[in-house]
Amino acid sequence: MSGVEIIAEGLAFPEGPIAMPDGSVLVVEIAAGQITKIRPDGSKEVLAKPGGGPNGMAFGPDGALYICNNGGFEYHYRDGLCIPGGIAKDYSGGRIERLDLETGKLDVLYTECDGNPLNGPNDIVFDKHGGFWFTDLGKTRGRIKDVGALFYAKPDGSMIREAVFPIESPNGVGLSPDENIVYVADTVPGRLWAFDIVSPGVVAKSDGPLPGTFVGAPQGLNFFDSLAVDSEGNVCVATIFNGGITSFSPDGSKITHTAFDDFITTNICFGGEGLKTAYVTLSSTGRLAKVQWPVAGLPLNFHDK
Image: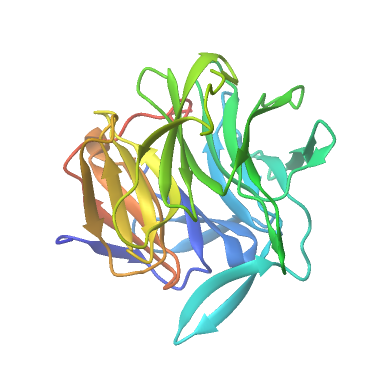
């Protein structure tokens, strides 16, 4: 895509970007177990080191940062590229964390649901009610693979609910503009799912063999990573192998791909004036890019705190 500007390099598998009002961008560096602020001039500041594998993150109604921590991956380095693998040798367990950016205090909110451990929390989005949806990708342990799920929880630590199980490898999660649908990007099958929301944290039961409503899948080899929704309701999914951002119309009738020069393109968020700037994490090469996007992003709940 033309007009792409690289605003930071040397990041340890960046993900989970959040565009801030002052022009800075917060990212996780999963391979370093830390959360980093990137200023408009490209300089960096480490805000916290939760360890494990901090992944997706979002601001909650109290102004704190809520983090999906996958517990850690093993990483392989080939030809200067950083490539995630299976479970880390020092895997510290999946969890949801809360970071107070003013004090630096980090708390663990959830490590399990109904007695089942969280294996690899991945991405998170808050609804207008102040609760959050999050995905658990699971973990691969040699020949054994955990199956993933979609969860809903409250930020005060008082409630966590399994909303959809099983999903093969749920990764990105986002809400439609009217918040009647929650979208989930399924990594390995390369499929986008939609689930009708009937009340906060509850989705309509599937009456068939599929976990929800199938939105779409592009041709060829596409692993799906995280996602963002734009102001027209299109779901913008970061794609691996076919590196870039693949955008789906809400009904899946139109699929467009915007290529980036990293085969592990992992996330997109919107910021800047009118939310017309897209920030994209190019993870295997450790870079953060920005580019003007043809459609403005959808404002996220509580991100103006």
